[in-house]
Amino acid sequence: MNIYETAKLREEYLLFHYGTPEQICSWPGRPREALGFPARIVERFSGGEVARALDLGCAVGRSAFELSRTAAEVVAIDYSQAFVDAGKTMQAAGRCEVSRLEEAHRRQSIMVEVPAGTRPGRITFERGDAMNLRAELGGFDRVLAANLLCRLSEPGRLLVRLPELVKSGGELILTTPCTWLEEFTPEAHWPPGSTLDWLKSELSARFELLEEHDEPFLIRETARKFQWTVALLTKWRRR
Image 1 (tube, rainbow, N blue to C red):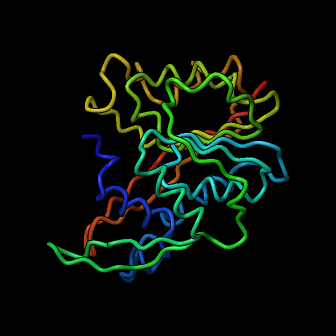
Image 2 (cartoon, one colour):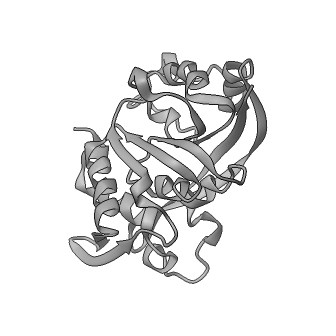
């Protein structure tokens, strides 16, 4: 079974995307710089209003809501039906109950909410395969693919499609923790060297690299166990 269809991952990602800092990690000295990742990465796009934005690998949708602040239309696509359904629930109700694991079999029900100032009516959630996107998607002013590449069996197929998805002058943001694992990506499709060098090699003919830096993020598993990870973020402009 795809782990991204499980209730465990659905609950963890709803908390990751929509939980408050206290709901995610209340310990003193928590790594504050790792909180709010789905919103922080959207803030890396240039300012101003745009017509269309695409959130590829949207998970449960927080970045799509953030994109809706400045994009008249947002298309949010994920391969997990459970994640897409969770995003639609947040869109329709504005909130969702999360069963947060404390320890062993002990859980606590908490409520997470869509952040104020977003425009849920601008978003369309759909299930789709980032390596085989529907032909009629069209072009976008902003494209975000967050922590997606190293979860695809053939990530190169998405990179080939990106010039078609990003309008001339439009912006692309990719983030990846570069955790290449054979359970997701056969070794034959891993980057031949560093992930950054591979992206430059594959994208530079059609995109200008505007910036690259590290973005930490924190996923809560239990009250005492967290995943602290650092993603590589690259921002590109379509030539």
